[in-house]
Image (cartoon, rainbow, N blue to C red):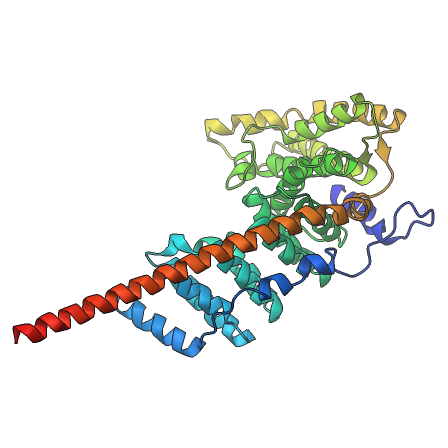
Length: 415
């Protein structure tokens, strides 16, 4: 029931509001052309290389058990010129990550890798290396995350966009307003497609909605927090609190449904324009009804359908059982708070995606300026660091050549 309520509410998002208060975001990338423009990146000083020769050089270095420099792998990525070479670069990024120099993969190399993947139609490859970040060393900065999320949104691949948002959430990188808005848009748009969510997907989407929503002190952020806590509460009731926070930047204290109710209480008690979207409130209501029905069924049959608990359950799971026993209290409290929200005009009839679309129109364009200025400074810093590495490499080669000539002279003199 809870899933059907959420899908029914979100499924109505694509209806255009005649009043003009909101307008549907059509099929396009959300970021401006200036934001995604490659001109600044392409204006860097070129260091043209033959990738076949570079690949052969790196193979020889690895065969001799010597480390490849970060500058070498950076040159390889920068000189990608085809889709096939993207696959080659992936292999050498993997090799570099598993070499003694693995800690020195440069931030600009990660950025260049994502740009090259987008340029040559290998967005899936960028996502693969990002999802397997430990194996490839892919830890992008916020601007790079934005480019990748926007690319998925442009192609209406909202599931892929949410996969990127999941990595943003795991790295706790919701620092830029643009990242928050793009992430909210990706999450709400994916939910609007009525997906069949696994327990794992409920957990990741719930965590992303909650953490991203905490960055927004408005109706959109509060509604995202409510929906996120509801999804996490569903997982907690089904599998226990350990299944919620393991591997996630989340609190390990039980009670995510209680936190969802706390959000409702805070909105109901706070004067101002803050509201909760009706679809998020309806989803929580349906969820509590489903869980209460399952609990009643378990009580009458003597079977635990919620958690699949067996005899001899470990003592640390007593907290999970205690949380399930609070369901009647949660259901009663929800009815009380729902009435307060309705009477106080604190429930927004607009679905979450419409609230997010409004946020896009109101805040995204103005948030791009500071990002672009910061990116321009960062590219300058990256280029200065790269030039310093080039000079250091040249000095080391000259020193090595001098030492080689000295050894040859000493050897000739000894003969």
